[in-house]
Length: 459
Ligand code: TYD
Ligand code: MG
Image (cartoon, rainbow, N blue to C red; front, top):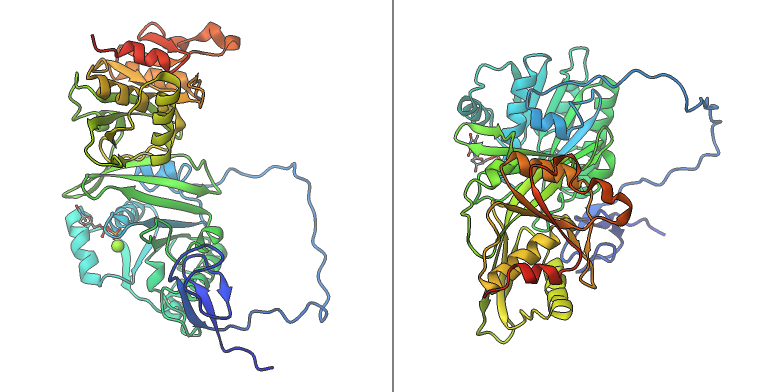
């Protein structure tokens, strides 16, 4: 039987089928399947040669700590796990225009003071990158700059004794291997090009940054397959309407994955934000009903943000629920618990919920703050302006303890808050309620959501 000369590859997840379909069976994406030339990837069998015996060693043993290269951008270094590890590959994903190129140009300029670095742009011409460097104040940085897209050329230039120690490929979707027939940006191209570049980085020991585009759905387009190949996946996110940006590690073989770095996009590039809580709370107006400050955690960092709720009578048959920066399902759950367990029915109202400043919160610990904002808006009684709130809500209306309560309280005290609404501690660690910061804040422990309603009752 003749071998098929083409296969159909889902551009979202990389699944291969032998006929076209409107929907990918593997990941459920619509219209993501395109035809690509088949590659002879089936191994010929292992019967021919004899394998060499590998040598096993014990787990115990001494190994030197990983050497790390500091970029000079503290927020980036922290997210990378404390600097860049030579020979590692970092994938930087994010929406177009969010600032990936800007961040990496700033990082390479910083690194160029210590080691030779190269920046290869497939998207912009050399002049465009130069113009950006001038704007960023790095026109004089010793960065080897090139505009190239051919994998063969890039490999030939990097594979030598004088290889730079840091290489940026902006973006991996523009690079193409001329021995593969598909167009640049397709799964087979992206996978093959990345694999070659990563192998070279490991062999030559340079740090490789790959920039990857993100689809509407928020995954790195095509290169979802890339996430498995690289050591670290960083997402650069943020709202275009706001000036600050968050760099989040979703995978890191050399550090924690829950760290974030906060940046502000300014006229002269990205500047680091050392105290994000102060920034997120900068425009807060105290004593407005429906506003509540949540003491959250992002990785090891405490972060205070304002949660705003607006509950308004609805004229629609199915009232509106609009959520920015939080999970819509989680809002429905909190509203259902308020209704079923506390008798506060909001079903006839439009409900708007907003995390001020454009941050996205994923923690269940925000439940209590959301509930407080909703109750406050519904009753038109403000949450005290000097109060922070955190706690998870269970389906029976109980308020559950959350991790790192002390760190959250410490941050609140540092920013001048005087009260905290927190979950009642389980009996076993009652002794340290409020931790060592109890004196700075007056702490009100809450066991059931019903108690929150009592706090914001309109007279
Ligand atoms: P860019 O780094 O090109 O985004 P990406 O590579 O992720 O597509 O960022 C471009 C945006 O950043 C653009 O909208 C302009 C803005 N910007 C500034 O506000 N200040 C600056 O100094 C620079 C260089 C860009
Ligand atoms: Mg770019």
